Amino acid sequence: MIRKVLYYALLLFMLMLGAGKAWVDDQLNTAVMQAIEQARPQTLIDYQDVRLTWPGQIIAQQVHIQSADSPTLHIQQLHLHQLYRFIQAAGDMPEHWHITSDDTRLSLQFLQDLPDTQALWQMLGYQNYYLSGQEWRNLLGQHVSADIDIQAQWSADKDTLEATVQSHSTTLGDMTLQLSLHHVQASQANRQKLKIAALQLTWQPGQGFKRLSQYWGQRQNPPLNAQQVRQQLADKITQDLQKNKLLDAPAHAALHAFVQDLQALPLRLQPKIPFSLPELFNLPPQHWTERMGLSFVPE
Image (tube, rainbow, N blue to C red; front, side, top):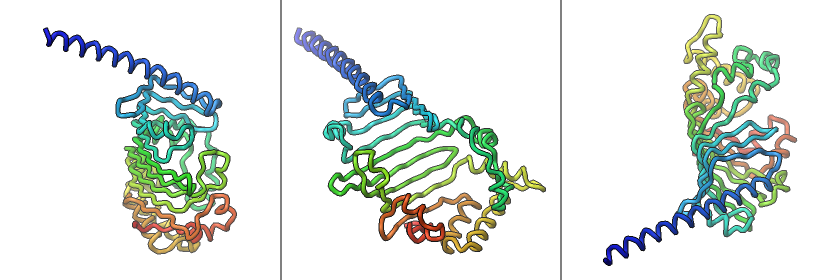
């Protein structure tokens, strides 16, 4: 008798729990729709389902983002971790946030509308490596996909943001980006004041670069294999950099290995004083390397 009472009590509790969870998910979907409408009306954001897991994680399925001024983005599954941090922030930027996206697909439809820059490539001496937008689409497909993990730490007192982005893509390769920004505020009105204090990027090329090498090789006269065409391109880039006195010897070696052997590219920015992009573009290009503290040597 006691076992039956416990069984039915447990069953009733589970039914109440399921009903409560369904109500929470319904309220969550309503809140997400309202947030989307308020955030950026000119962007079309659609999704199949949004649900809340018990550890405090929001999971959105089949997220589709379309904008007139940006490529279309489709995310198979989007995870917003540690929801309580966003609740604590009460509409402001949380001090710590963590987002992961599975099978994030960037549409390459925009490549068809790229301007013709063949004359520029020819002027620079790289006409053998020029690809039209349609050729890029034929080579890469309808889209490129990646799994992405983003973690960030924001300090409201110091107006600084420390972020780590990790991306895995069969086509583009594996990438890790560590970024430190100054003058970061929750308001979007001060984007022009953003300054880069440090940046470290490690990029291991993927299968797309191998296909690109093969395609370039087939267009040469006489045809070259993928290794030969990469060596030819790496030699030319190094010679041009040396001739124009851009970058230093370690940077030349790192770029040469990246292009010829598809080795991981270690890029670092460590400026003595944080800089903004508008400030950088106001300087002659020959001063960019020193101002950014640019190097290609791993830490």
